Image (cartoon, rainbow, N blue to C red; front, side):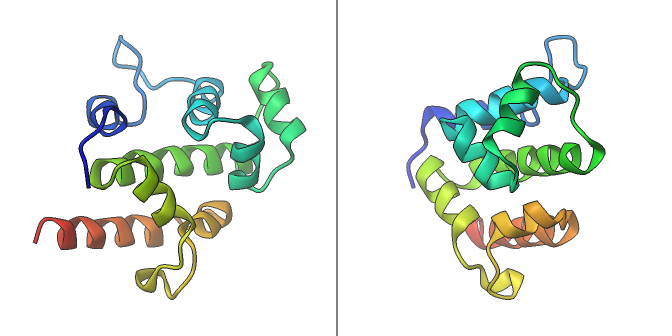
Length: 131
């Protein structure tokens, strides 16, 4: 694994806090995630919503509580996985079958809002990486 700019950014600004130390809005998280995943369509696929829904969010439409939780969870998972792996390996982790998750894909657990299981798996990955 190589240390690249994506990893350095993830370490410097986990969860994308503003310059004033306040959490950024969900709309800004959607923008950042769209940029990280390089398209609104890809982000929509990851969240299990329509592309038009993501487009509406980017234009300032409100985000319902269920999808807001998915955005927050994807942001949390993505930030943490980027601390362990470079971008391509992090994507492979997100979309690959994971034995720590009962051979489920982490992205499917993001869509289902399974934060505890995901964070437990990330902690196990971290322990294995630094062992």
